[in-house]
Image (tube, each protein chain N blue to C red):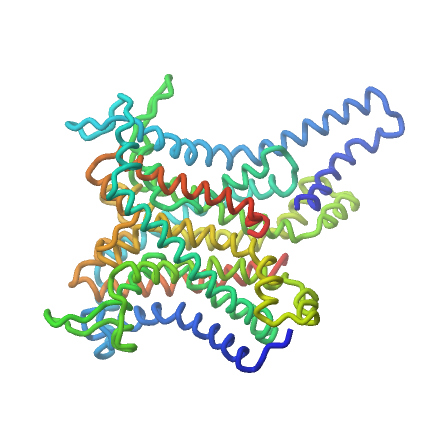
Length: 271
Length: 318
């Protein structure tokens, strides 16, 4: 198809405009974290490192950050195991209900956070009676880990399943032809094949959990605050604007390179 | 889809059968059934942990939530009782104020989806067909990275962007938009739609880009050769092929927008109410049964939407 020069220019401009649209808000927040002024108004007044120093010296954001890291690590570990298992099952076997299971995997991220949040809050707060014994999950570190793992499974799953789908089954066949038994094939062929995809899934699951706010708000107990919660409770307070800017920028600076790394790993293919 | 690795699964099965194959008899039959058992054991042990986790914790909680909507609230303890009632549903599904919030949320989600599609189609067309090959991956990655910048951080960023100056107070200056372009939509529905489009646009860009890449060049060429103008080619040739990709993207833009409550809370400082805010407010009231009844709205709308999109072929693309 021949596209005239002016339409070409308009299209290229639309790409540039989209990139500007996507990045300017993030840059604005990053710039404001170095602002000598204390509000969100633009243009900023001057440059300072004061707020970064102050954030470094304040205990509560660091504590919240540490909580976020702990939750994200634990949730990622669970999600990785479950997601990888599911990916292998779905890719290797044909069975009734396959469609339903892939639907089930997507549900926790396709349904709005608030639905997941209220549903989990409800069941964590109840006493569950199993006849022989009854228990209540309650709220705290563990409830956050359970909740986060639930919606991180799909991330790990997607990465591994995509890799398996792209890789040739001939490799497994060749391995068997050369006399490797099941465990050897797994160790020498399958695992190296999916290793970088598992790692990419882990990074993305970590990033997803690290940023999450909706489900977190409803499933964290009192006294356990993650970094997004720390930001959320301070967003409306005029006095906290500079520190919120710093921590928001910090989240970006941590998450975006992680996502980029995951992207590289996904692309790199079997190593 | 699963055929390729399924061959690999069949391999272990062949291996179990072949050694005894020349003499089909009871021995081979036993081997065969053993292979079947092994296959099911392997599948079961792979699939049980993740499926059990999702079904028990997630589906279980969703069903329990639906159930709560059918129970009366104990006014004194403010906890759900065990006496059944349809009052919560009646309220959530008939009271005009609530219906308006639901209607507005749906409209906002539709607006976000249309806006995202309208941005994604020309932009991904340009990336996939006009930009030089070496730039493509980089631009697509650049589209996707902001997804991971933190949901709350992005909501907060839009608060900073949209802020309007005031004549009073210590701080009279406006935010980025107002001081750069002299105008900001302020903190209303327009702000909500703009911020939500910002949040979920990458989810539309990715599948549409994939669809664009798959669009056969010959199809476009043929249409041009037969005398169709670019617009006609787009409408009658490209768009039908792209539709499943757009549907795949719309799943995220639509459902994530519909249930959002952070954007109205953070960006508009709760001046705008969406279904999510209704749920949050009611839950904190605390009226858990009514909040549960409200969550049925997004649940029903989104499940219906997912089914419709599956019919449109969206799931073959994600």
